[in-house]
Image 1 (tube, helix red, strand yellow):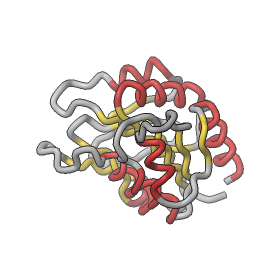
Image 2 (cartoon, helix red, strand yellow):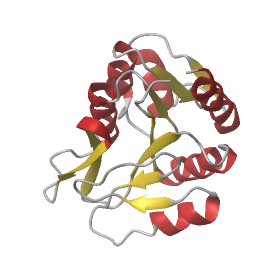
Image 3 (cartoon, helix red, strand yellow):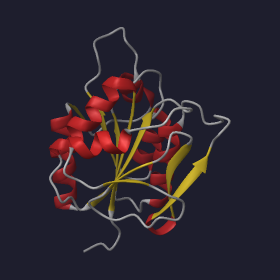
Image 4 (cartoon, one colour):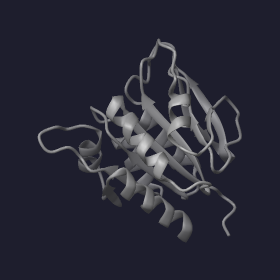
Length: 193
């Protein structure tokens, strides 16, 4: 058995993205043999209730990550709005401080690239609802690192949100489907790996 844990990195934006995250987490079996890392674009300068919203939506423990945290399987980790969640070597969390919004709408790419770099190939990147193209480059990095890529079924054309941009960006996507289809694919990947 491989000693390296699985890392499931999820990125989304806005109200639809939050609903997708809640549906995905509610569908994932508990306990799950993976570290779950979630980035949701949200207001930078307002208090966040994301932890409490996700706790009500799923049976997994939800933690606000802090610098240097050792990530544990079966737990969902989020960052604060102006602190961006990333993975550092050996399952350690690293928070990228961003009070001046230097990373703007690139926080999903930031997480995905860190997972591609430090996840030892046992990685799954997931792009859910949102506008713009954050996550596309990071998902390509996960694909290049040998990880699995999954994307929510995009809205019909001509809307070009995060899912469609991720699909069109670079390389094949392993799974395209609903949060329930993605949750089943995650379970299958972890069970077989």
